[in-house]
Length: 159
Image (cartoon, rainbow, N blue to C red; front, top):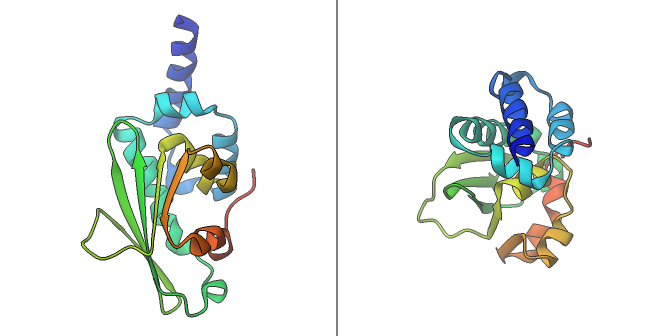
């Protein structure tokens, strides 16, 4: 058991010093690909979790494909569970994608709920959303058509 903790400690030490703002989406995808779900779960705590989630959601607007979204208008609520539940909302309207932290009273067209590991795998291109849904690692409520089209609206990196 001590060996597992030291691997997680080594990974945490490398990630703690990493400037996520300077990491490209492709580099991030490679980092996530090299970690198991268990390792991600062990690392997704405290300030490191906050930094990673903040950077991922902060990039969504830049990775948005307005030409693919066309006239789409939707509020997508993301609930990431783990050491605590964190909610972000993505609003797509008029060819623009905006992201805000926290839950509003607005009605979401789509709500996605998953743990940290599944979220990071999904947004880094390392996870199959259909498989995650079928194995109940990704819970979806609302517009399933929108859920199935999400990968068209964002540039998802490939590891």
